[in-house]
Length: 305
Image 1: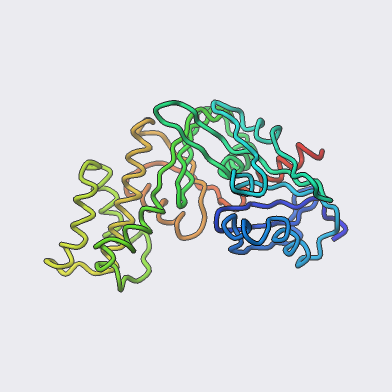
Image 2: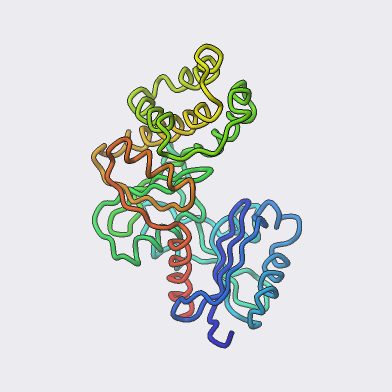
């Protein structure tokens, strides 16, 4: 571990990811767990971090750069927000140091949109943006989609975040599929992929008829009672309807012919790819893990150059 230069941590609400990195950004070791903010609030942020550093035998005293919910008001220490419009470089300049620690631990701030009619915040996604856009030197106007429990759609011009919107797509899917009458329709559902016609058809339908969203939700139950709709198709339709509704909302404030930078990974990323294909929306994909790691590297390099 003699090449280790710093530690990078993406600390979410329910997830924890840590990378031990060299000066050039090579990954020397990696740790992942479910010890997000909700767990660390009780067990201690310093204790969670120390246990993972010990597990990879990280050298003592390495600086640590952190993004995500560790900087929330309920987190380790509040890192605050940078107000938009803002250049992503400001995120690196405004990192907050955690006091009373042997190592130099810095937590990156989030972004805040204080417009009266559409207040919004993000924490962690700004680091993904930094890694995804600055590394590839993307310029001009960009429309960025970052799927998740609370999906973010961001308008960026030359690394300046001008506007963003949060959609509670993932959380609503979880609540509706488990805690409403539709839970009966999906009780025996199997895993599905974006190439299932029920998914893509639901995306197209709701994108063109967003005002009918709650009606379409109920048809998942009535369709099962009257037409034998399978549990898997019902779940795929709900997913497609919610993702299609999100895309329709995002396009309400952006040109519909805008190409999209999709920052995503895993199965959720595949569903968004399928949705964009169904709607004939041009997009490119950047892996979310790579993006956040590159953003943390950029911040660490700026702070400890």
